[in-house]
Length: 226
Ligand SMILES: Nc1ncnc2c1ncn2[C@@H]1O[C@H](COP(=O)(O)OP(=O)(O)OP(=O)(O)O)[C@@H](O)[C@H]1O
Ligand SMILES: [Mg+2]
Image (cartoon, rainbow, N blue to C red; front, top):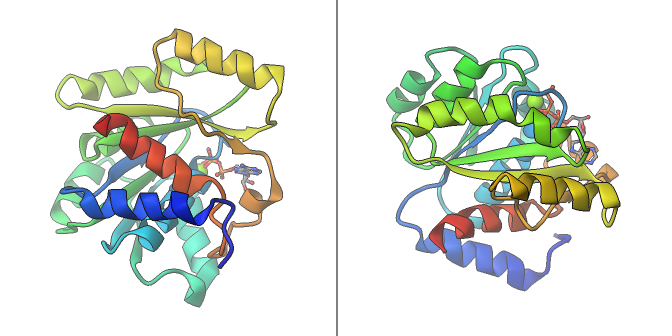
């Protein structure tokens, strides 16, 4: 199995996951379309399934697209047996998750337009990852997503990480976007996900190479433990 990341990085993630007393419960969300939410949700779920011994519940909560759910159906027998995928795009999402009896990791993929479902997802997860594009307009567009998080944040600690996706590495636009979001005191992950075929071609498959996503997962969970 060949991975973009080196064996020691992957070994470090394994050690981190094994040492955690709690499973990873994470929402992927951004109230805007096509930024890489579903790709991020599925590849993070696959990283958890590959580098930890716990089972993963992947919840597709997008009432319009069902991308994660369809990805798992297309992958058929190649889909990892330790990732259980459900399609729960409903406003009762939090209740369904709580009543599922699932005790392992949880990843929730939310859609681009339903703030209600996003709030439900945040109510039952500890981490919130927001995949955004590295364009100048983006800093202005994160506000509705942050407001949804702030509403839930009143009753619950939410660990928000911004993830730049579909990037062109080394560009001025990436540097400027990073500075703009860091200027809003947001936690921007050091690693970003470049725009390459590896990620778009992963759709409907179980790729050998999860790209930078195991490193992204490491940064998400290390960020809050540090
Ligand atoms: N890093 C990447 N490099 C290249 N293509 C990517 C990358 N990440 C995602 N894509 C592609 O971009 C498109 C949108 O990605 P994805 O479906 O993950 O976004 P989304 O935010 O879930 O969209 P929606 O808002 O419709 O749910 C897809 O065709 C996907 O394969
Ligand atoms: Mg999606």
